Amino acid sequence: MNLAIRGLVQRFSDPRSGASTTVLDGLSMTTGDVQALVLVGPSGGGKSTLLRILAGLDRPVAGSVTFDGEPLPQDEPGLLRYRRTVGTVFQAYNLFPHLTAMQNLLLPLVHVHGLSEPAARGRVQGPLERFGLASHAHKRPAELSGGQKQRVAILRALVVQPRRLFLDEPTSALDPEMTAEVLEMVGELKASGTQFVLVTHEMAFARRVADEIAFIAAGGCPVLASPAEFFDSCPDPRIGAFLQRTLHA
Image (cartoon, rainbow, N blue to C red; front, side, top):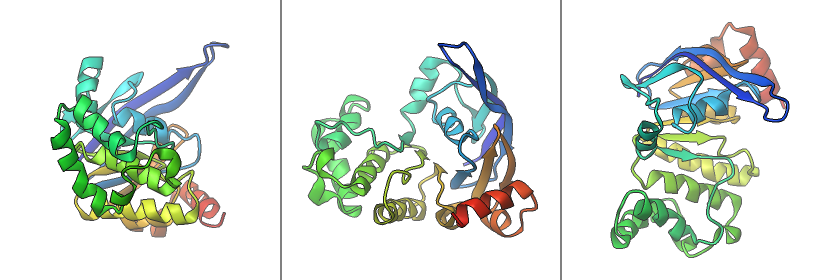
């Protein structure tokens, strides 16, 4: 996965006051050929906004994004087609509460990607077993732990066989044990060759899973580096201050 971003700008307006906030301010970066790109940085720096643009969920005010030499579409029909080729996982699971885990997994396969229900069940069964969720397939989200819900959400994005995954802080609402469950699953995805962009505050995991780490702060990307460079020898003082806060919090 080669990602090139040029002059990305994103602003949001407050409908009540009319005030405008610039979240991304001319962000540019170019990765190497990576499988796992991890976005880190302080809260409010633009990580989640950038991820939503990369996933085709939001359109920027200005700038361009290219994956593997292919520009991200700028029109809504093009973005809709693009969104069908990728998977996105959010902090809040976004599972349908009235459906079982199995039904949540089948829904996009049948109603978005046009598979028959038997074909969709056949595609889902193996991953359910692989990630330890087969015995929970009949349960609704309220009957699942936080870690199980997030694993179902990741699996729902994965079973559509996306070109790449986008994961936005998938462990932020979880306790340490549930966090470990989800991070183990993401680690298995890395081992299996899945391409993904991950926003996380788990620095030890970022170091282990990333091919490159992008530091997103104040609407820009001042540092894009390998994990070794980022954690051991990065000269940018902002990185040192950030790591001191996160690693010793």
